[in-house]
Image (cartoon, rainbow, N blue to C red; front, side, top):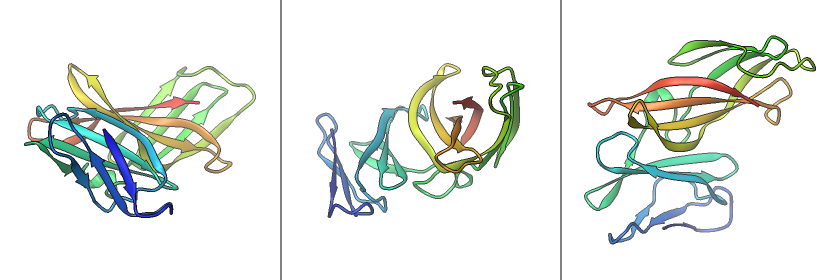
Length: 194
């Protein structure tokens, strides 16, 4: 059970996340994350295949902030993604994509990832031409998945078009994996066109 306790009802309210995990004593996380106005999402699983459960908590506070906590030795410790994936709690990868609706193609590039191109990936739309898309606010929808026979972390990046942030055109999807030494990297990425 996870309980969010904020000091007041402001969007950037400090507070703590209280976690009750099986028979263990309650744990209260009081990091720099703002408790805001509620949970956006949460997920749990052994994302790095080390035998310990990770808890991913996304908080909605006018934006989104995420904390990843590793359960080990009957307590939680904070886990971070690599520095090239951005600032703590706001992890993500800068993405720029060109989506051509008439030809059903896209190409996308991002910091620290290979450029991708795809053809006939979505249904053609003769009412739209093409759009240049950019990401906003970093990763969201963290979830534990199985990838090539092991656990991994999948997360999304919201991409918006020419008309501003409300003009959602796609999600960039990323699969993050960890090697035997605990190093995290992007194993695969692609676009899901809206």
